[in-house]
Length: 215
Image (cartoon, rainbow, N blue to C red; front, top):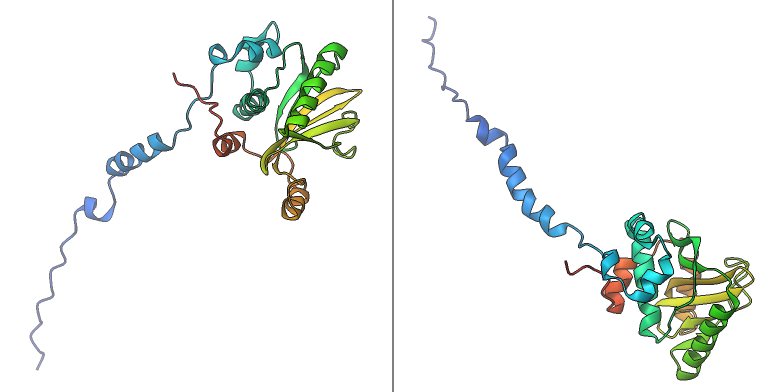
């Protein structure tokens, strides 16, 4: 005898919304996160100091606005740190390629104007005497043409380095100051392997420098 067929359970389809998350719901959830993670605007040309604007030259607004975000960060941070240390850059002229924020360099390059360069040297020498800087001759391997003499800012991390030579003046920054400890000396040589990888905005936060717009 054939057994009577048993009734099969009825499968009920789940609503599509239960299986596939709503695109609208996901977008709504992500939107606030995206808004919070948006990077704050950097200082605008109109918010620069008179000295910073003079460094950029006659077409300064167009030059500044044409910089990448990292290049702007390098310019704002390096000039702010020099001002913080009592260094006045009045009279110096940036080279045409003098604002560098790329995979190799995070530096400023200035023309070799004798009077302006000597004025800068005199200020930095006073900074050395006051303990804000220390004498540190740049390596010719990495700073050829700017390696006759130089100083380094007397902080252990995110330290400015300034060098002089027939090509003019360079101002760059290293994560670690090799003059402050054996550990920092080792870390400095390690960072040489990845030049240009300093994030100027991260450095500004660590140093307490405000390079962001209030507008």
